[in-house]
Image (tube, rainbow, N blue to C red; front, side):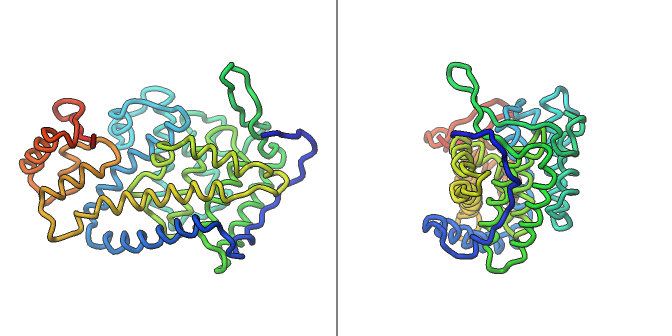
Length: 357
């Protein structure tokens, strides 16, 4: 992407283009799929509260792991789980970053109805996320200009994108927030299309000196939850991005071309965003495809739970998802599935996990 480092005029935001209804046909199909699966999920949630609570617990671990992994912030699965469940204090800088994301995610999960997309919420979430790991950067917009760079195969660098200058960042964020509020209150604007457009603009402003990617994912969840789309609470939205982050970054790159000149095409990024949300709803639907049926026997429910799991799953986790099934029945079915070659297992003892081959 070619960049001109000339005079950049303050970028303004206008989402009225979402009212004209001229969206790509493929996006219309994705939206229809999301709405349909959302309706099914709402019905199930009222009938399977225990299962949904357990799915939320598992998804929270995956969200903390996935969002940090996208940024190269990693530790072992055991440590992630211990930190997310607050059974252990962070042991190093990476784990401090992970714990910070956990705390910010918890605020969104527990308080999203009372949170607004405004400057105070953004700065408070950012402060929570970085307070321990990077206190000097926490809770305020960037004070120096930043660049999004790419490292070539030969080790040389090139500027991929020049975000909004530091001196214009606060005003740009204010304009973004006001434009979002205006579009949010317009019944002619589809909220599911609005949200990724706002997130794309947030990422192009790049308002913080550190943590912009993770903040964008937290804000994605906040806006989705407030709009009534909560699949990301039960199937990790961040982990879905991490699984195909190459496509995510390519969509971001394509939608940022011409951004400073207001000539960018939002639909590359919106398409990737909505496909990610659709995949969350599809995974949630698959998880319940058999669990929701009274006619399906326990063996089939166990098999479906293992085969549809996003990550290797333990006997204890299966038991928590299917509380009416005995541990001995779960063990018997798992043993047969392994011998049939349908699943494989890793780990030993209580750490044993099962996954689809």
